[in-house]
Length: 274
Image (cartoon, rainbow, N blue to C red; front, side):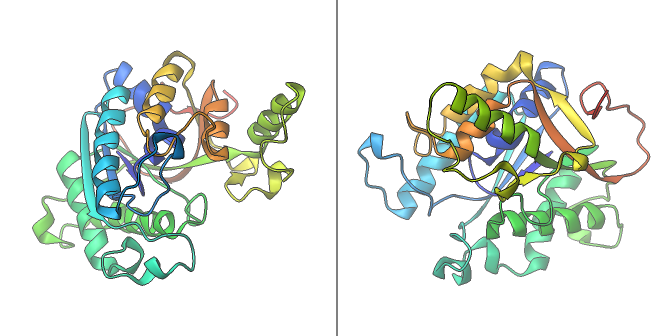
């Protein structure tokens, strides 16, 4: 199960892993917490969309992307996204950032107990990028993974279930350096506006990588899944999309929680350096 904040996040950080699982017969579930209504709209489309209209469009794009990636089950929690840090939308009544923790955690607990995953993927405590919705997703997911195993917690959310592993996606500094160097070697402008790899807020030191997933055989499905998000991805992708697609061989992860499991996972989540 992958728990993400916005439509398109699933393809950026875990698209290859979801596609790899589908290719190898591993059941997958995607939980998307917000509807992305306050995101930008690709100017190449020539569209003017209200927040409600963009939310409808992004829900359709999410379903299409999930189908491309082979995701077996998609759950959309339907919260409004919260805008960037400090935005007025942070405190709006339907914004994910402003939801009572108990309510959001309960929704994810219900998803976990219904799907019964052995592995859950979500963001690190900084939310990967620091976006309020990503941070809220981390908090809800971490608490839900713990609460789902407690028989007396959220008794209306189904029978208890113990998740065996929790992973956080990692964008290694070395991978960002390679992306920047390759762009410069092609004679292109610095793809990150001159900012060094270690100064980009969503990169992490390579030492944090504990596992990786080989995605070379499913890379084109990852790319195709991301391109289904037409309101977000244009001919000139935003920097994050371009850097995500530059990682053609592996997606990287940090193991955050591990419990006994009757299955081995190193066939997909192989230890880093293996």
